[in-house]
Length: 240
Image 1 (cartoon, rainbow, N blue to C red):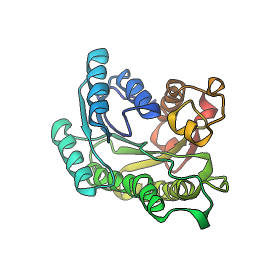
Image 2 (cartoon, helix red, strand yellow; image 1 turned 90 degrees about the vertical axis):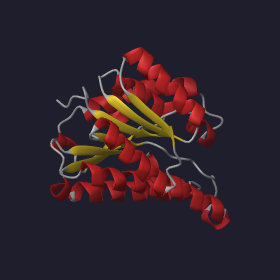
Image 3 (cartoon, helix red, strand yellow; image 1 turned 60 degrees about the horizontal axis):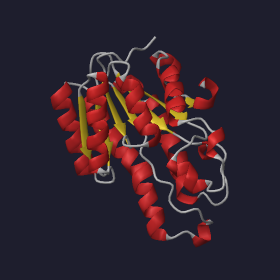
Image 4 (cartoon, rainbow, N blue to C red; image 1 turned 180 degrees about the vertical axis):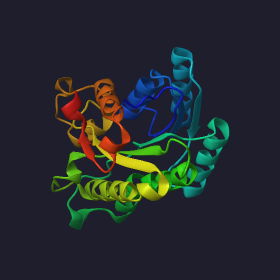
């Protein structure tokens, strides 16, 4: 069974929702954390909370993952501080606009793909270069969505980005023999988050799993050995 104890885990979109819940759950397992989000105050707050509650080392920084130079600098600083990165969780994403393709605003299309796809690539690219060949290998995890497998009209750039992220995951998994880094994706399913409220404003979220429950399902999956993870697309609902 995989252990997070004394591992270094990088999480994007870590200041709220599932990202924050994952940070708490993994800190509770004894890992060091590298946290990224756009909101500087929110990153500072959760970093302080994690240090105080779990007595673990946390490196938190405001970083727009759409900017490769800032991503790369953060990864280099994380490696300098912790000597290595063991696990990367590409969680950061935006919903974008809910609209049919012929009405979709081009600027929103570009912005959504810049965060959800290009940002995930930038983080993975920088981390792969740092993780390649390190003893014990490494893991890159992509937070996916049901729309990556079952497209729904009106989901626009978000749906396209999640389909592309699944392909990115598969490519990294196929290249794992060269790098020693495996990859998988996890669809969290419906959860009581701010993004879910944007997508389904009339929904009663009291019937949905909390981010904390989803994070525990993620941990059940991520405790599996590398061979059981590599190249697979998981659904957190199966582990709740």
